[in-house]
Image (tube, rainbow, N blue to C red; front, side, top):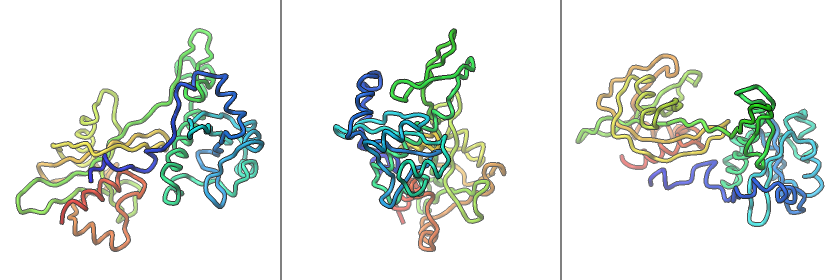
Amino acid sequence: MDTAQRVLAYGGGWLDRAGELRTDPARLTALLTDATTVVLPLWRDRCLVDGDGPVRLTAERASLVRSAAGETVFLGLDGDVALFAADLSALSEQSAVEMAGAARAVDVRALVGRLDPNEAAVQAYARGLLHWHRQQRYCGTCGAPAVAGGGGHVRTCTGRECGRLLFPRIEPAIIVLVVSPDRPGVPERCLLARHAGAAADAYSTLAGFVEVGESLEDAVRREMAEEAGITVTDLAYQGSQAWPFPAGLMVGFRARVASEEVRVDGVELLEARWFSRAELRERVAAGRPLGRVDSIDHQLLSTWLAAGD
């Protein structure tokens, strides 16, 4: 199945983001005080969880958390129920946990295998938006403080001669499954690499950030040449994944090389080697994962593995 047709972790959430409500302060204020409104508390990019998963607060406890929050942002509507996220990062971890009636603070990536996919998508969305607020307290043009507006989806510079509008930024990156030359009768192989800082036997697909003035395809070609010394052709889009850790958008491709000769840069990539499908299946059988299970990396490899012998 084409990766683009499959829902990846942190995407495909059920939430109606209700953008028209972001410019209606009176309506947002009313929603904040509605007894049915749900508030998701987070602490320094972590979900606050109890025995059942991330806590969802309503009524009095939600009001208490909002009063202590550095920022409270509007996430959207779940049917007729409004969802907000509140950032308790200014508190100590213990204070935040107690205030939310939680048991501990946990990274959503450690929970994703146990969460409903829609819940994981919303928690990641909340995480990314609140992270941006903590990092965008001041205007990058004039240095004046910036204040939140638009339900938490914009900040405005308070500089008298500036007033710049600041919006959450997305950092696009490409991630590529590179396959060997198309030679009749020769089994196809894929190129995986060991990245700097990775364990000795940890291999994954190649990736990199898109630079200013580049198309996605240009970024694929440049990154593959810089990191692995290869020239790729036949680029095929495979799908994309929200990756708000803190602000990524992963764009997956498959590409083919003319030559299997590889020259790693020795900086970002320490080693790269070709794997047959049989070798990858042996690794899986031995308990070695195909990339992160919540990442498009895993999906690219799984899809390729299922496509042949």
